[in-house]
Amino acid sequence: MSDTSWTDRIVGARMTVDQQFSSRITESQFSSQQWSLIMTATEFEIHEADDPDRAQLVANTEQVEQVIPELDNMPTGMGAMGGPGPNQQDRSGDGGVLGSIKDALGMGGGDDGGSDAEKRRAAERLTQEYADELQSHLESEGRWESVRRAAAGDE
Image 1 (cartoon, helix red, strand yellow):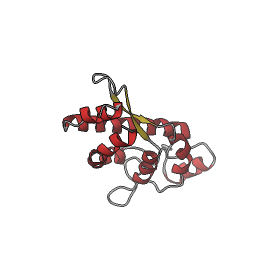
Image 2 (tube, one colour; image 1 turned 135 degrees about the horizontal axis):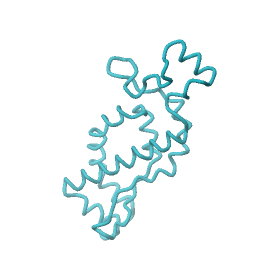
Image 3 (tube, helix red, strand yellow; image 1 turned 90 degrees about the vertical axis):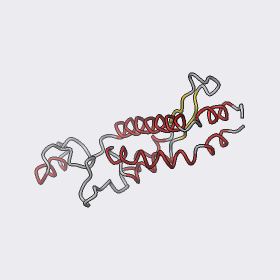
């Protein structure tokens, strides 16, 4: 069977894990819009699908690097009361007017999200956490074996 068939089998599970994982996104440096873009650039693969003991759902993030620069053009996350979320606090250490002046002079410790390389690494870690959570969900629902076999071409 083609890769599409096994991915079709996990659509409902992904929706469930998306809801469960939303708190993890809120705690991350990414807004929900940024996370959506990262997930659009992420493909999931099952490595070693032929081996039931070693098969693992893996986030392929090769394309994520291409969307990292676009993240800066997207709105940042907002907390429940409309203020900055816990991941959006001033990271210059000084805050206020002094922090703004230091940032403008290039002495402030960078932008809120860090460098593109840091964002890429954070996106890679978070997408793999998501893949691990998705595999765990499929296992707990008794669906992992069927998905694994479909990825291996056995179904």
